Image (cartoon, helix red, strand yellow):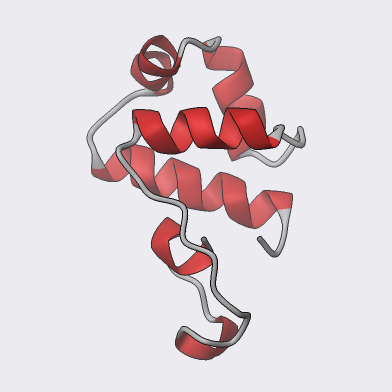
Length: 82
């Protein structure tokens, strides 16, 4: 992970790609829509547990790889960040 802002942008893009609203994601994840909003805007630092809950709700995997091993640091999607 490079930044909270980057995580938020990637989660928003993944949510929108699935055609979900913040409210729908919140219901699936068991979180409040306001919390989804603060994560997506980078206004809060989500815990690791919350990140994994959101990844699960979005049907995404967490993949750890050395920095620079994909796209030389030019992340455009959540899959490139994790």
